[in-house]
Image (tube, rainbow, N blue to C red; front, side):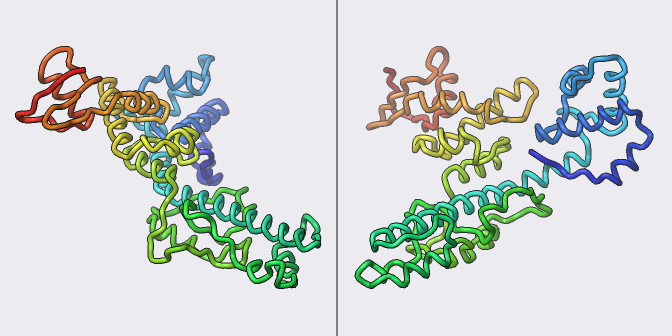
Length: 333
């Protein structure tokens, strides 16, 4: 989370009795909770280090605030308000990702149309100021002689089929103030809310096949899939938007398998949170492992664990998505 709401009146009422140092410690603890979107560590010394509490007074302040405003559970120190706000933020992630993708798509189409209209004017021997409005630019193109392509000049620009979503009605500059979500969104309704008139082009977005459902960009699909698996990630993360979204080998099945491995490894450390940084090397390992193949009952299990028992080998095959044969012959390369 990059921001959170702070109700000054409620906060002042709840913390009026705190000392200056205790109040500072409380704010730092809240910021750390929101920034990591998870509870504070159960180890008090680890918490003190996270908020840079060095002097005895500062360390004592952290202990006081933890005992008064937080609850120690199996996975760490929880704050009731933080937990509620983080849960609401995560629930609104799909809608935010869709709106961001919509806006990027709208700006792209707006620029493409503007460039095309300027080109038509130039080919006709006319010129227009660089900062002319789109409405004025369209009117100039409409007045061109028919031989210059006026008949097609006013047609709406349709993006390639690869454009995943439609454009929102909000202007391209409306990105300064974050608006927190107050309810759990439904993806379908979020998409339908954005299927409105294009603010830049003045024409409703079109699709080549209106009867077909809108398709989300691959990075948004990956983000939603991993969020559902409990992974803290956004569609704009470079690993998701570039490394994985542009690699056809990174399938949903592979990502789910990677999350399973990550949770299994973290479970041995009494941890349940899976971060994108922890998941990256696991996905890379799965991509580097040759896919097991099966032909005529003979299974090529190169790269699988066949160093010890049959049970270990079988478990390794299942982890790689291979159905263990009943009577088939297993061969190794």
